[in-house]
Image (tube, rainbow, N blue to C red; front, side, top):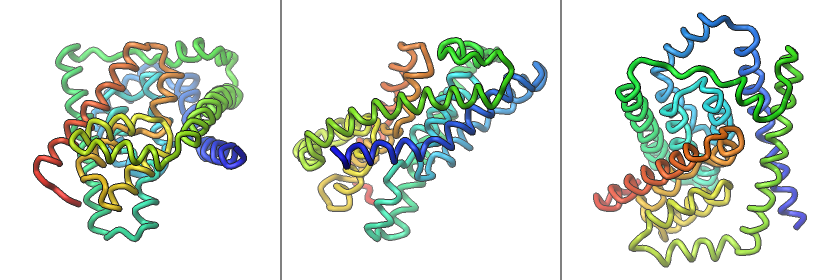
Length: 285
């Protein structure tokens, strides 16, 4: 129990700087920028998926939590959010480095994840643009503030940012503690056995494991691949579907439950399809 509490607090504290900076930027946008400046920023976001896909491979789930908040305020597009979620590496990169995986193996894995995120993000944004035309969604920062009851309208940017940050931090800590408790009870070994026993449906099962909003999923998937238990496709399926706690934060800050579920299913579907394709081609990293 002591280890679970320490791990939960440690993971949560790592996110605090990302959360605070994100909300500080959002509050600044809301309070300081003009309507014209907002429109310029929105229209310049067509390369968002490319930037998001590159940032996502940094071994921190802080970018995915930031992306969730920015998307809830409609500052970034769904394509950019998807690119960040799909490319997010969470604990994968530290595990690969600590296990002394070959540099070219690490590079290829990161490249596949980033490429999948960028490509999916660009396609998603293109499809939405075709469906809705050139019309852009309005920023929804005010709506998100009302949803979280943070009294942002008082005009104090730092105070409002701190309020947002603390609310999300407490939410992450509570949910992460419950997940860590569950994983601690079940055991990572049992989780690993469950995946490896389903080798025929590896990508399908690994994708489900990847959806667990906890770093344990990326640790297990990466470790099993390095040990030769999982194929490259299964590992990629799980790692693409996983987005750290970013998905968890999305459900908290974006009050459109149906949209959140669609995003979850989309991430899972993309991960599984990519995993199956890699397994079919026999590709190895």
